[in-house]
Image (cartoon, rainbow, N blue to C red; front, side, top):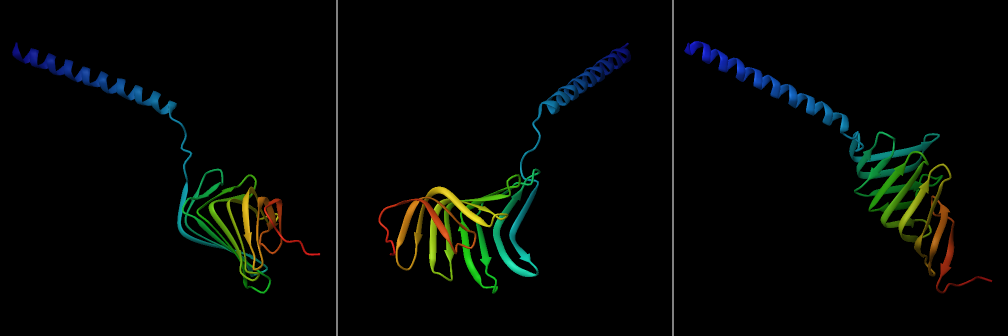
Length: 183
């Protein structure tokens, strides 16, 4: 008689465990359906150096300690970026640095933020701003934020600026302060 009770209890326990397991699997399936798809980076690249060439001539060199690439093609440079533009003689013309940057694939536009500095090494000119956009297709850099441009002769300030990507020519949209005008 004791064998039957032991057998009955064993079967009852086995049945309860099976039902509990099935119930927990069903709950997990429902939770998986409610989960949001992953939207974080799909590729992480450390200590990246990219070069852009045209007819085997170096045009641009880009360096960053970390690049995050997302499924939609957008990129994030959370640890800063350095972009070097070369002239036709293969000399370093301009250097752009920033604390952070991002690339939007849909618009093919880079946006650099946080202590953005652009130096034209050949003309000894320097641009400082907090945000700067770069469109490689148009070969322009631009911002609507406050800018300071320092030259050998003067310091120019204003809101908004458009320039060639190599910073050889620029236009401040709304200049402020004092500045000299050549006759």
